[in-house]
Structure formats: C-alpha cells, structure tokens
Length: 331
Image 1 (cartoon, rainbow, N blue to C red):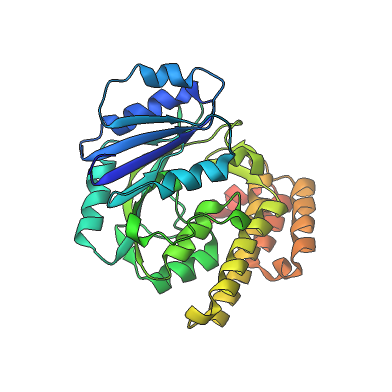
Image 2: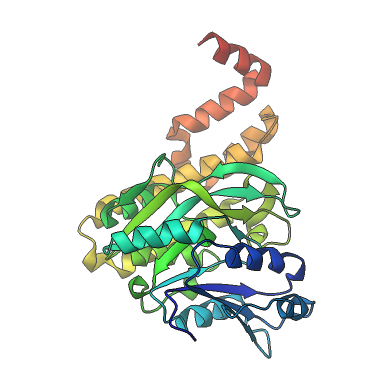
C-alpha cells in the first residue's frame, strides 16, 4: 500500500452493473492523493472484468476466495487502512466532483474533528435524480462543526444523521472495535456514536455524494424504496433504538448527561414511529390506512398519542388532501 493520505474503501458483491460508476466517481476526483481499494466479496458476476478494464495505479483489487458476509468484509477492509483519512463508499453510491478536496480540507484545518460528512443527492437505480439536495441532519442548513456532546444529543433526538458514503473519517479517530455486530444492519450509526465520544463532527451543507435507492440494496431489506428513502416498519425503528440503548449502556461512565440523552433517545423513537406512519400513508394519506398505521405505532409506544404530529396526521387523513390544501392556502 502506498503512503497516500486517503484510502477509499469500496466493498462490493455482485454489482458489476453499478461498480464502474462508483470507481469512476472516485478516480475523477480533483484531489488525487488517494488509494481506492475494492474488496470483492467473491462476486459471481462480471465484477472482476469491470475492474480489469481500469489502468490506474491508485486502484487496487482484492478478491476474497469465499463470501465472508457483509459485516466482516467491511470490518476487515477498514482494519487494513493505514492512511490519515478513510472512507467506505458503498458499491451502489457515488462521490460527486469535489468531495475529497472539500472534506480533506476540513479535516486538515480541524484537528479535533473526527469525521466530516456532506449533503448528498438521491438517485434511482438507473441514475435518475430523485432529490438533488438531501441530508439526514434534521436541521443543519449551513456548514457546521458540531461538538461531540451536541452531535450525540442530536443523534439521540433524531437517529442516524450521516450518510456513510458521504463521510470522510480521520482514521485515528476510529474506535478500536470499528463496527459492532449487535448494531447490524445500522453498523454505521453505532460507529458515528462511538467516534463522537472523543471527536467533533463536521458537516458540509452542499451535496458532494450520491446515495442510490433501489430494491436490491442492503437498505431495501428494511423496507421498500419510497421517494428519497425507504418505507420502514416498527422492527427497523426498534433496531435503531437498540443501537442507542446499547451505546448509552456501554458508555454510561463516560457520558456526563446520560439521563438527558436517554430521554432524547425515547423521544427520538416516538419521532421515528410517527415518521413511519407519515411515509406509509403517502401520497394520498387516506383515513383508514393512516389510522391503522397510527394504531400500530401506538401499540409500539403508547406515548405516540401525546405527539402533536400524530394527531396532525390523523386530522389530515380525515379531512382529506383537498381540504388540507385549502386550509393551508388560507393561513
């Protein structure tokens, strides 16, 4: 491995039809001091042929003799990184022009920042743009560096606020255990939380990566593709809540405001349950499906009934979209 400053890790399995786009998006970056390493998890399609067509000394190809599973593939790939900065790019996602230049600059200027992530575009499988400017920060509208305590609090309140393919990490800031099996499939969420125990987290508000939504993605196992995301259920909400609960339990001694973070995590679970209902009833938001979804969310957490957003959803479904639009027009 060369002594370049950035390593872009690209784990892949049977994505010959998409992997070329991911490779091109990295090799065409204006910042050139990087290695791109593909870890092929024993693909059975033409992935090796696609990679063989490239002649660039920054590109390396590691083909595993047998499929070791998604998590071990990611874990082993990240453990091998020796460069200052690292990024795991999913094989169906892309870096947009200027990503490495902008994110490396942030980490170079901010030695206490462990990771910088960006806004991103959302694509369909064929590359059609669903959303030109998306983010999961729930409120950040400009370039921001969040102190560790603030990032943790906002993560408890909302959930995973980072798109992993849009996140450049300071390799020395990575926790020793990297990903944890108990966090699967939200392994990146647990990683961000543990990283924030000792490092600030920066955000660039312009889209510098692209996240692909499609029926064969790993995320599609959590719910069907829907607009700029996935329609998930109670099991996924509980899974992410479990990541928070384990984090709070395992690091209780190092968290000065554990009680406050626990309250925010509980509030965050209710928020995600309400969002589950919102997504499940788009676009018509008819009364019966909405009320059924609200009942499901309430069974999962009776305190959903105390959330004004839940009542607004119920009212909107009963009034109908036309009435709601008329009311909004008069306000």
